[in-house]
Structure formats: C-alpha cells, structure tokens
Length: 543
Ligand code: GLC
Image (cartoon, rainbow, N blue to C red; front, side, top):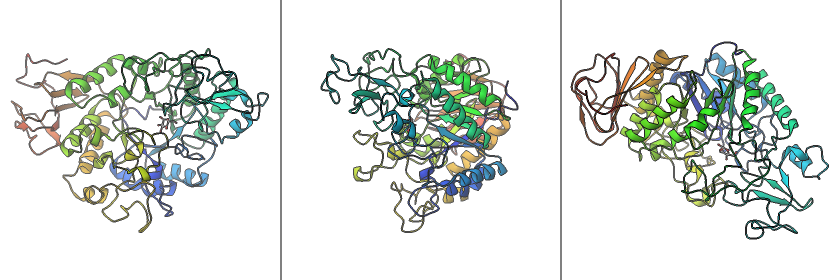
C-alpha cells in the first residue's frame, strides 16, 4: 500500500531536455549543473517536479535513449555527485526530480549486449531477442539476407527499415524496434526483470521521485514473433510505414511488469512515480496502463496530443479520457515533447493568441500538467537545415525531431543565455530576440506571466487531487467546462463570441477582450469562478 500523499495529482510537471536547457561548461550542450542553475527560475514559475530526458551514459546514437550503463551519469552532462546535488537543491525548493528510464532496449554498447553478442552460450544471450533466419517472403529485399533465409518476420523499426539485424558471427538476427544500435531487451527472460528492479531501487534510494518510462507500451514482443498486419490508414497513433504494431508492442504481458514495479514504488515514502510513455492508439488501451490502481500512476495521452486544436476534437478526447480512466486515476495533459512538433507550431501556427488559449486549457483540465521546456514562453519549432541536424532516427524523414529540441531561449543575447559567448550550440537558436524568458518575466502581459498565474491558480484549485470535470453548454466552437471550482470558457474560433451576462468573478483572461459581460475575442479564453452554468445558453448543444 502506498505511503504518503499522491503528490503528482493536480501537480505541474516540467520536462527538461537536458542538452538544451543550460550549458555551464561551454561545450555547446546543456548539463546537470545547468539544470541546478535553472532551479530558481522553476521555483519562481511554480513547478512541482521536473522530468529530465536521459541522463545515463550513452553513445548518443539516439541522444541518451541508447543506455550503456543504467547506474551512472553521462559524462557530457555531469557526475553522480552533480545528480545528488541536483536532487538536494531541487528538494530545497520543493521540486521533485523524475528521471527517464529506458527498459525496452539498451545500447549495443551496453555490457549485456557485448556479452550476448559473443555467442549463443553467453550469460546474457537471452537478455535480447534472437531468432534464426527464415525462408519465405521476408527473404531478400528487406534487409540483409542471411545464409539460408531472411528476417524472422515483417516487423519494421522506427526508421521504416527491417527491425532485425543479422549477427554474422552466430548467423542469428537480433530485434531492434528503434535503431540497430538499440537492441530490444527480452522481457520473457526473468534475469531482465531482476536487473530492472535493482535499477529502480538504486535511483529511488538516491531520492529520485520517479521515472518517466520510455516506450512503456513496448517491453514484451510476441513469443511466436507473428507478422504485424497492414495498417488501413496512415496515422501516427495506429502505426507507421504501412504496419500496425500488433505483435511488436502493447502486449498484455507488459502489464505484469508495471504491477511489479508499482509494488516496489509504493514501498517508498513518499511513493515513487511511474509515468509511462504509453504511445497507444486508443483511450481504452491508455486506461489499461493504470490497471486497477496497481500499475502506472500517470500515462501520457497521445490521442490528446494528436487531437486537432478545435472544440469538437479536443473536448471529445478529454471527455472520453475521463470516462475511460478507472475511478480515481489521474490523467496527465501534455501537448509538446522532444519527439513531436511543439504545440505553439503544431496546434497554433505560431499565433500567440492560440498558444495562450491552449495553455489556459492545458492548465485547467483536471489532473496533472506536463509542460515541455519553452512551452511557457510559447516557444515554436525552429527550422534546422539538413547539415545541422543531429537526430539519426529522423535523418531521412521530412520532419526532424531536432526542430523541437533547440536551446532554451533565456534572453536576447547572441548566446541566448544558454551558453557562453561565441560557443556554437549543438542545435541552432530560434528567434530568441523576440521570444525569451528575461523579457517575458518583466512584462506582466506576457505568456510567461500568464503561465505563472495559471500554475499558481491550479495549485490552489487542484493541488493534490483530480478535480471534477463537467462540460457546459456553449455556443458553437466554444468549449466551456467546469473543473473543480473553476469555470473555463475557451473560444476556439476566429470569430468573437458575445457573452450574455457578466461572470461573478473573472480570475484570469488570455486576451484584453475577455472581461465580465464582454465579448470573448477570437482564440481567447477566460477563467471565472461561478457556480451556475453559462447563462443564456439553454438549449445549446453540450455534453
Ligand atoms: C521514445 C523517446 C524517443 C526515443 C525512443 C527510443 O519514444 O521519447 O526520443 O527515440 O523512445 O528510445
């Protein structure tokens, strides 16, 4: 049974892509001392916890998502002593530290894989998924052909190439759902479970507040390695490269791992958080990762992230999420991360009015909020020309993940306040002259100040719990809802909408026209405190 409060409920979490946050040793990459240097800012902003993108040693074929040592700190980012200091300094400011854990695969440079590759009789051979070549339709064409056969099935990796690489020495293929340098772990092997229990304990004992679990829907692969079926329509949620990953991900056995880890996390005081990168197509599948309050406490909602920013789409996903989640489960709302285009670009086309409205919505939905660094200043994607691209996974794709990973825009100086003068950052700066933390901190009308006000408000209104949600009737294109004591009216159209009667109290508005009894301008929203529904809207459609 969990000891202590569920501190993540209603909390504001903040994702830091460490390499892009703040560079203190002038090598062009952000680092752990840089995270420590930014803690006062985060405390001023009001965040409850930070999630750090991978911090463990790695050859960086996938920027830390290819781990070569689960019990260390990447030398480019700092030392274990820096991590301990970060946890202690964050704690002094009331901020908890969540790390990124990658259990679906390791780096091919991990000692387990090096041993596994030494031959079929090696101690760690079964930590990975090996299979003999198969004669048949996968032979030739797709990938390297082995003597006497081809890849064991039709699975494709994250680049669209075959998910199997031939190990010439043993004549067997190994599985990699991502890059060939990221061999998949074999979760049918009990030794792998024991290793990860130890890894969890190692970090939890050090004061880490929890883990964001990479590819949480991955882990197990079908024991019979059956072919994946074709994808009827191309959709980021349902599959890629013409295939539905029915047998290569979201396997039922994965839930057992989280039940085990949850018992372990609940044994700590306060209980440690398990937050899954649950990239699944349906909200029913997402809900399954919460179990019966005995698996993950939070699971990322990709159907929400990929919904269009219009009233029908987004309110539909929110309503269905809340209906599907088991009683008492806490949703987590996020609209940007290091793998997708930032929401101020993807949802808002760089329109600041829309970004402010989106932030109002994100911050007032019941449950936890996860901001991505830069969301609070409405940072947009930054075009990265091909010669400057750093992400191998999307190297040959039209959209590079690099565009959402550029350095934090701290100030208007040539180094953006990210690194020392004259240092070339690992990815190019965006337009830091027109959008940066320093300028927005001074301006009471800025997006940054709006976000800070929203975080303070949500702490009072929701802190420690999942607020009750009710959609209210509203004119077409307007999304009105009650969330705990707050009433949100969001105009997701480019037309002004008259609001017939004054509200009891306007707590906050995203634009100048959203005053009591006035017109709600295009792409504007407001937050009021009122117990009744929206007056003058009887008979209008709602849910
Ligand atoms: C997750 C990470 C992504 C990484 C992949 C493989 O989706 O968020 O950045 O490339 O897993 O680890």
